[in-house]
Image 1: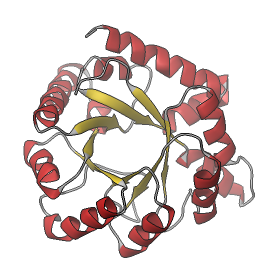
Image 2: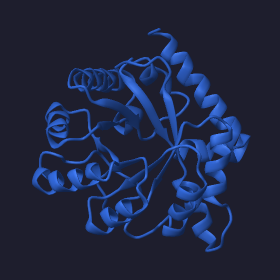
Image 3: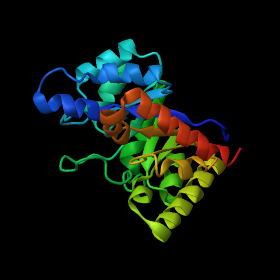
Length: 247
């Protein structure tokens, strides 16, 4: 199950955040997605939130029509979002927790606590041939529940690792390693995402079980200084350097 090259999924949400600050059409997140693909992105991620604070329904329409790589639709486990996913049929859907008051997704989904709600939700997506991922913390109970619930893959939350320093960061990296190894033993593909940047991505890339990173905010922020394509090129370089450690 372990792959050598890690796929890079680029989250374009915060291009839309900048656009929506002025209420116009610029910058266009779909244009950013197409530039990311030109720069080597393996997929595009977009989170259609309940309050539409960044990505809009029209953005999803256009992404489905114009992308030549898979679209990963991040979504809350609500009937509205399920209907949108079943209508568009993106390549994959990543179910994430969502609260109106949060600035961004904070922590992983509580699969254990929401198990009964998620079982039919996941099944309906899978019945529509949409690959299902769950965004979770690297916790054994959450990983095992994700497998039991029928998820094809999980995305382990790396935000805590990014926020820690010194020995605390090392401890969180060990937790991610253990979580990724457990996912592999359960025959689940394992991804990583949230907060990753040039300084933190290589150590995660050195964990051989990870097959895909989903990164957005840092790449969009760095693009202000060096351009979107260059920010992706540099991220890919750090990812490849980290992965080379376990070649």
